[in-house]
Length: 217
Image 1 (cartoon, rainbow, N blue to C red):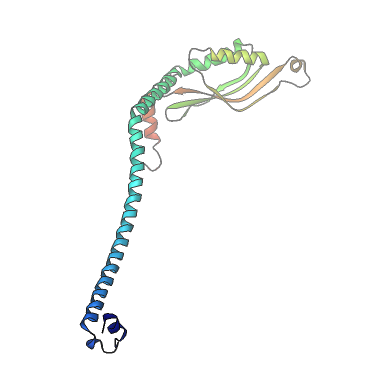
Image 2: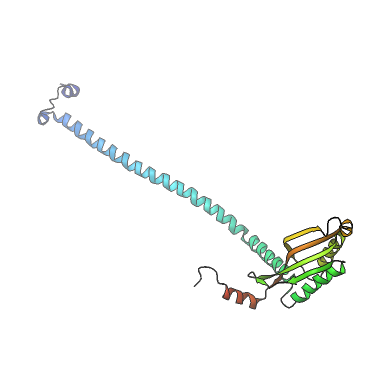
């Protein structure tokens, strides 16, 4: 009988009497199946590891390119930061200091008078510290024409020190509706303006000591 005839005539209930060739065939077949299953699962695990490693490689490569670009431009960034720091310091230095503030306020008041404006109220308030600068509020009520106010702004802008004036709750209205003054264009400017000065290192150190950031012990 041939091998295939033996295979067709196998008695499944009497494996012990199978021909040796059939037994060898099934033994080899089982070994091959076991090897294939082991190879499949091993390869699958390794394939997952390979995919994970490839994704990680792409992430690391992107980070490397980004950091490399930062390193290449680091010198330019440092130079730009130095220039910005110098410009900021120059602007701060152009602001009035503590000892110059009283004179500056007087010059602002005199600039208004020199422009023909009447100061009905010009009352500086207490300073408010803001970290590296201080602001000085001034309550005012001024009366003048449109051109006089324009002349006043021009005089303030021509002061030797940089003067920053910000307006808060300021109103500009005709002095008296229907009056001769209103017909002539007289206006009343009323409200609060703030001007600013820089703080010296001692003031900044004192401010930091008395006003620690939240969370500092």
